[in-house]
Image (cartoon, rainbow, N blue to C red; front, side):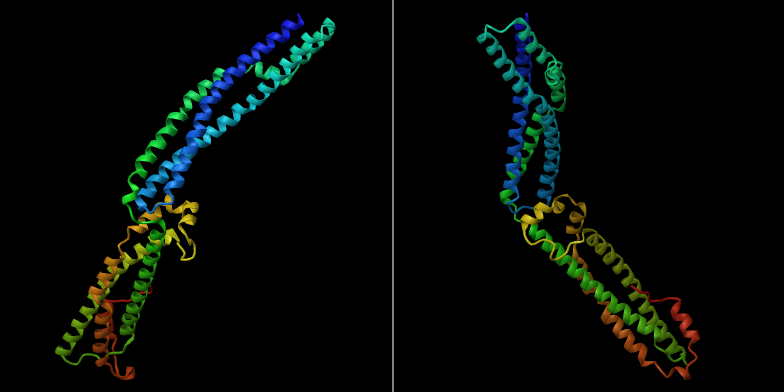
Length: 331
């Protein structure tokens, strides 16, 4: 009777082992796919490609990594049963072979051996294991098909890469150049603001004739136009600077494409894409065309030409007229 108990447990364990092994074959197929995908990513990171393609590849990478994480979690859970099953099958097989070889064993000895297996917690846990639940969960995850889809997407994307020419390092250098240009334009804005502030502080003679009053009114009107154009332009500069500041790129942050890839930020940060699209050349051209600093300097010279000593002037009337149209502010 004890032989039959041992043999029944042995057959049951063999059945469980066969089910787990079959499922492991499917799980290991995903392992092979994961390795294949990682090799594709590694090959892609060594190429010079556009930021757009890098972003698309990163999206596939994030999707694949999430699937790999699910695969690893399932593998670990299933593996908790795989090794004990193999160990128990080997142990039962050796016990059965021993009992057959040692015919002098009494029935009580055989029953004691059988009872040891019956009382084994790992054995009972495995015998009660419902492998179909694992299979159902695995089928629901559908990781093999989803990972294969990622691999196909990646193949399609990388097939287009040989014609592309912009590297990740080029992107970073581009952004750093934009930062430098915007900083220069901000400095120009501060210079202009200083000139306008100086104009406001200059004491002017109260106009004695209608002609001189008209001349100063025209000058104030020109200053008003300069100020309005300055405000409109600086709004664009501030917006561009904010976009670049969101990236917070430092000149020494990255020194190679490999470090960029490892950081992950260049591929996943939407702020970088927004910053990359800033057209600083247009902003610089617009500033040059406005020629605000030179126009302000001309106004300052004309303004000073009507200057007399402050103690001789009662300039409140003209100051009131001036401040209605123009008032510099701190940047």
